[in-house]
Structure formats: C-alpha cells, structure tokens
Image (spheres, rainbow, N blue to C red):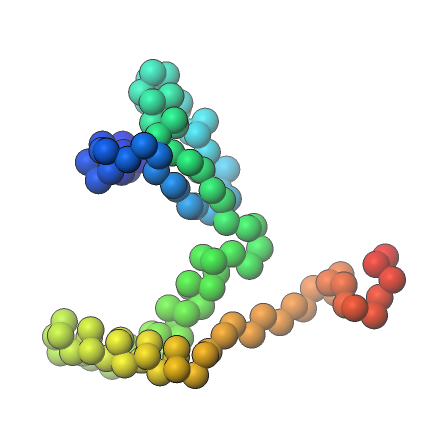
Amino acid sequence: MLRDLSDKHFPNAAKIVLVQDNLSTHTPASLYAAFPATEARRLAERFEWHYTPKHGSWLDMAESELAVLATQCLDRRIPDKATLIREVAAWQQNRNKHHVEADWQFTNPYTRSSNDSGH
C-alpha cells in the first residue's frame, strides 16, 4: 500500500504526509519487515509520519459521524448513486447549517475537573 502511494499515486511528490492511528505496526520500522532494507529506507524517507492521538482522535470523530449518517440518512434502501449523492449532500448541508458538534462526555473517574486540586 505505501509503495502504491509512493510510486503510483504520488510519484512526483517530494514528501507524502501520512496520517494514521497509533497501532504499533504503523511505523517506519514496519517497512523493514516487509521490504529489503534499501527499499524500506527509500519508502520511509518519502513519508512524513503523523499519528492521531491515542484517545479522542479524528478517527473516533469520523466513526461517530458515519454512524450518525447511517442512522439519519442511510437507514433505507437508496435506489441509485445519484440519489445517494443528493441525499448525503442534503444531510451534510443540514448538519453544517446547524453547526452540529461532538458532545464529548468523560466518564473516567480520574478525569480532572476545574474544581479539583489536581491529585
């Protein structure tokens, strides 16, 4: 996959920004397990590695938003691609118009509030 990104999709890019989750396998070192050292090094140098936060990442927000889309918009049979595009666009326009935001609620008993002493 990284070889395809590098050589097929972005062959002329000086650097490719790669945003990914924090799985231990998603590191430049994993390239050395999959490729000979010279190829692994070539690929590793083509990418700029960025990792999402371990908790509350953009991936969590995207998954939540897709779940809302599925229940509010895609909970029925949609007859064709044109209708799907139109329905999703209308749903998205409505969400954006109403400035819908994530309502993060922390339930961890160790989460600090503004009233505690920090212990």
